[in-house]
Image (cartoon, rainbow, N blue to C red):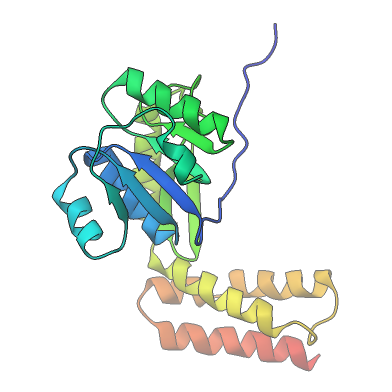
Length: 220
């Protein structure tokens, strides 16, 4: 008996890419909010939209077409990604068919795997650190519980340290030779008191230790 297929987790870069969201309700609003955060150019097609979406349209942050979805409406816009969020399964299926014809990645928010190219994962956002979780649809309840647990244990200190490490990675280019040496430096930082101090609200002390570790390593 063949094993059930599982998804391939990726992080899509949507900066300046056209994304079409069909529908204007609660689910569409949440999707649009996250899409804008990712830098996408968002088109919403719906005869009625939430107050938040209407405000975004009035501010010029999204393009809004006040209309029922009609066959081949996507052809004029050629989006990279399409998300169908209406409460009409027949409309969602038409959207998915149209999206596939123009080779756009497609997601139907009602969870129909037959019409969707991908599913959204539960996300813990500690920019620049992003943690995505999925049970491949096996247990949404367990996924919600696990996300809550991780949100409590992974605080903003991880975001700060991730940012520092990202800056360090750039500055090390040409200064520290060899992948093993860089890994050893990162490990010393992670094994130090930097993270606990950040968690205790002592960023100055944490930064001092961080800089001392880096200075010692570069002096070798």
